[in-house]
Picture (cartoon, rainbow, N blue to C red):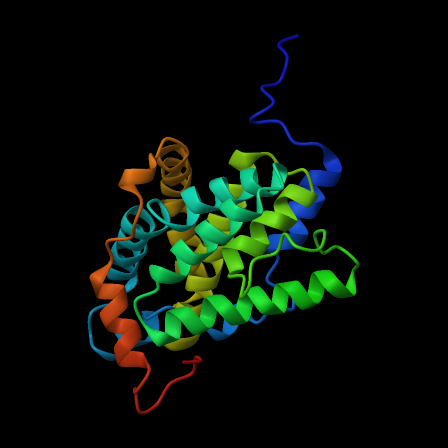
Amino acid sequence: MQAENPQTSVNDMALLGLMQLVSPALPIGAFAWSQGLESAFELGWVNNEKQLGQWLEGVLEDGLTRCELPLLLRLKRAWAEEDADALAQWNAWLHATRETAELSDEDLRLGSALVRLLNSLNLLPPDGLMPEEPGYVTVFAWAAHLRAVPDRQALLGFAWAWLENQLAVACKAMPLGHTAAQRLTEQLRPELVKAVDNALQMNNPDLGPIIPGLALGSAQHETQYSRLFRS
């Protein structure tokens, strides 16, 4: 029998820990934000299932692949090495990439909500390691490290949670039917794998999101007259 690759295998407790971490039921309020997608609907940039798939694929390729996913990898390894300087550096770098007040606020609020949850479960890291104003990716990386989730699975789980949240936004605001959402899930599952493959190979000089449309949509959303999601 062929031995499992340690980068692809995951034990039962780690798998359950990852499922808990990416569950929509996790009480951190991720469902309350649209990341500019609600404005894309309002402005007519995204009008149907096909256009939504193109939007999500673009954000995944030029956003998560170049930013959150490779940063999650670096932060997870910094947690493993208890490298407070690296944790602070990458956390600050991530904050610097947030191009609107809304995106910055989302990251900080989700991060602080996850910190409160972990604190209630007695799962916070040792004193002195958590950066000031930790963002969501930073705290997610700690939880994934604590749960002994392998790197690849941690990135896949993070990307999956992002996709589920964006499709939930579309179901509420487009509206998008649940069957259409499942078609998009089928369409984009291979793209999630591709994004993780690319993120795992990304070098530091290549990091940084290139998603001006999302930034413009997020900025517009901050003053949008009528909206379902937070700014």
